[in-house]
Each structure stands twice: as C-alpha cells, then as structure tokens.
Amino acid sequence: MNRYSRITGTGSFLPPRRLTNAELAAQLALQGVETSDEWIVERTGIRARHFVDDGVFSSDLALEACKSALQAAGLTPQDIDLIIVATSTPDMVFPSTACILQNKLGANGGAAFDVQAVCSGFVYALTVADAMIRTGSSKRALVVGAEVFSRILDFKDRTTCVLFGDGAGAVVLEASGTPGILASDLHADGKHVGILCVPGHVSNGHILGDPLLKMDGQAVFKLAVGVLEEAARATLAKANLTEAGIDWLIPHQANIRIMQSTARKLKLSMDKVVVTVDQHGNTSAASIPLALDTAVRQGKVKPGDTLMLEGVGGGFTWGAVLLNL
Ligand code: UT7
Image 1 (tube, rainbow, N blue to C red):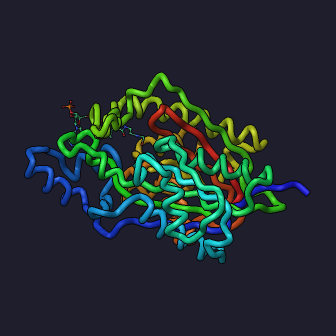
Image 2 (tube, rainbow, N blue to C red):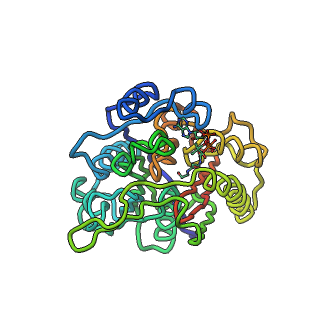
C-alpha cells in the first residue's frame, strides 16, 4: 500500500495584545514616525496586528496553536513522533524552538528541529514532514509556524514596522493510505539575501551588525508576484492538475496586493483566496497555517477541498504545497 501524509487537525494562536493601525500610528507619532491607517490599508490590506508581551516567546505561541491542532485531530502530545517548527524568531540561538516546544507539550522522545526559510518556512517544513512520513521515518507530525517579529522590528522605520505581527499556526500531519499532500515545489535564490534580512549576529558575547529587520519592499514585491505564479504552476503540473482544480488558494499573508496579483495570474477569483492579513499583518512563517486554521474554523475550507499553499520571503525563498484536506 502506498504511504501518504494528510492534515488531520489545524490550530492557531494570536497573542491577546491587538493594535489597530490607528493605535500603532498614534504610538509611532510619539517617536516622530509618521504613518496612517489609510496608507497601511491601501498599500497592504493590513488593519491590525498582535504583539506579544515581554517574556512570551515563539514556543509559547506555538504551544497554544499545537494544543488546538491536536484537539482537532483527536490526538494527545504522546501520539506525536516529529515536531518541525518554522521560525526566524527562535526562543534561543540554540537549542531549537522545536525542542523547547516539545518539552512544553510533554511530547518528549520523537524528533524535533527547526526550519529556517523565513516567510516560506511553513511550506518548507510541511514538505520535509511529508517526505519523512512517506519514507516511514515518522507517523504523526506537528508542523508549526511561530513568530515574534515584534522583537526584530525597527520602530523608527515606517516602511517595515507597520507590516509585521506575532502569531503561530500548526497542523497535525499523519500517515495515510490516501493522498493528502499531492505535490510541492521549493526554491531559493541566495543572491537576494540583502533585500530582506536581519543582518546582526552574536559574537563573543556581543551583537555585531544590526539585529533589526531590513527590507527593500519594492524588490521583494516584484520578485514575489513572479515566483508565486511559477511555484503554483509547477506544483499543479507535478500533480497533473490545472488551476481549475484549486478550491482554495492560501498564500503567505504579507500584502493583499500580492495575493490579488497571484490570483489574477492563476485566473482565480478572490472568492477562492483565503485572506487574513487584515487581522494579523505579516506573521512570516506563521501566516499560512494561521490563515488555514481560520478558514477551517470558519467552515470555509472543508474536508475534501484541494488547497494551494504558497510562501515567499527572505533568502530569497519560495514554494508551494498542493494538498487535499
Ligand atoms: O514576508 C515577506 C514578503 N514581504 C512582502 O511581501 C513585502 C513586499 N512589499 C510590499 O508589500 C510593499 O512594497 C510595501 C507595503 C512594503 C510598500 O508599498 P509600496 O507601494 O511599494 O510603497 P513604496 O515603498 O513605493 O512607498 C511609497 C511611499 C513613499 O513615499 P514617497 O517616496 O512616494 O514620498 C514612502 O516613503 O510611501 C511612503 N511610506 C509610507 N507612508 C506612510 C512608506 N511606508 C509608509 C508608511 N506610512 N508606513
């Protein structure tokens, strides 16, 4: 019998502190940084974001998302033999956030590691988990995206600090005799490292270089709209499907204009695109599982639906996963 992997539960979590654009703009104005609700909504579609309080880490957000994904799957942490966390804002330099999460869950003993592909992290992690399940090295995985981007934002840079937020999303991925994940397509082009990065690093007890996020937004935008279409088409071709076979497009939630452009290129109506960026801004690796879980819990996305998940971000990295829920 062929062995495949399927998503059997989804979960997500946003920290309680929510800032609307107007609230963030008022705070930034106190530091002489000028922005407005109108600019942010028109250029990005974002209306609010959630920020963690001091002392809360990616693993804490991941823990809540995992608990609800496990509950949805009808499983306990002890059923899990693999945890992959996609994050660019890990709790520590090491060990991995996945190990810290594993201990908080009480799911000790299985494999646990982080994947670092910035905003493409979740599609990378899902692809790795699918491969590990299909080859028999794992039976039941938690695949998580969790971020505290508020910790790496430069609140004096209005071109970036209004865009990002904190959050986590998770799925339970289980071995199955029927295909869930149908195909995936991952890429990176390291020559674009500089257009989206946090260049600082720890050295001899000091941080060397700037530890805050830098982005050339226009360069990222241009690359993103091209590669998202390519990745979707490549993934469909691997599964012998066309865009007509997609019930829902669940793209990385960075900017509504990028999502609209991708939908247009794939000839999909915006009614088929899951959009949650308005509610949480760009949560990097957490954004796709956050959007997926929101749509599942709203009853929009249903078992049996064919979903195209797409990520793009720092690296430069991009990729897509096509699956039957
Ligand atoms: O997660 C990884 C993927 N990341 C992304 O997908 C981000 C991709 N890039 C984008 O989403 C967009 O490029 C941004 C939202 C970052 C910027 O939108 P844009 O339409 O490319 O704006 P822009 O950079 O061309 O800036 C237009 C104007 C500038 O003023 P001038 O030079 O025209 O006078 C900026 O200084 O908007 C100004 N501006 C702002 N104004 C008010 C930039 N940021 C702000 C702000 N509030 N927060």
